[in-house]
Amino acid sequence: MNQTIRLATDRPLVIAHRGLSGLERENTCAAFVAAGNRSYYGIETDIHRTKDGRYIVYHDDDLMRLLGDARIVEEMTFAELRSLRLSDHDGKVREDLMLPSLEEYIRICRKYGKESVLEIKNHFAPEDIDRVIGIVGGEGWLEHTIFISFDLPNCLCLREKLPLQRVQYLVEICDAQVLRVMKEYALDLDMDYQHCTREIVDACHAQGSAVNVWTVNDPEDGRRMARFGVDFITSNILE
Image 1 (cartoon, rainbow, N blue to C red):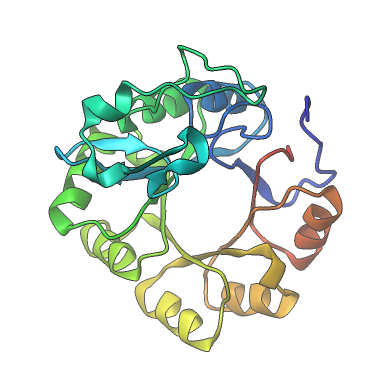
Image 2 (image 1 turned 180 degrees about the horizontal axis):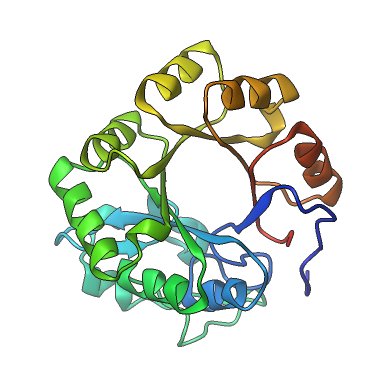
């Protein structure tokens, strides 16, 4: 695709998934800037802890899908990861396409006035969550950050440290147990749109939880999610 697709609704806030990954290589500064220059409410990304205790932007646990390299991200140093260069969608390696730091991502969100939607990959120790909070806060962007994670202990640790922070619990399927946990710990929902129903959205709203759905790339799916009343739509290409 060479252009974004307008989602003809004013209801949900649209979040650029891994930056504007439908146009630029996912989770790169190029993708974040592309999203920053458009009407997205927020820019989503993923961070791993490196072997030497820094935080790098990358989605997968290993480098195979994007780089053909079987090494594990969290077993590599920040410098090793930064030395890598990614290819554009046309397959050509670009010298400017490197793995961003957490700081670089936050600074782009701040420059363009976009909410940061920050996924903490895998399980982070409490001291790492402290450091991530410190980095985001040090950049002056904590009030504009939504934390998300599939790891419930990460979500609960964030809630303990930041009682008023927006935290979304990532799940594929939302059931009664997920709803109970969300209500108990004041978490919002971030779920696979393919399993989302109007009943789930209504149940979340009834208990004060917002709903984000991922990853919606077809305009009709987006319109259907809007009819359900979701609060956020995360997409590679819809705007």
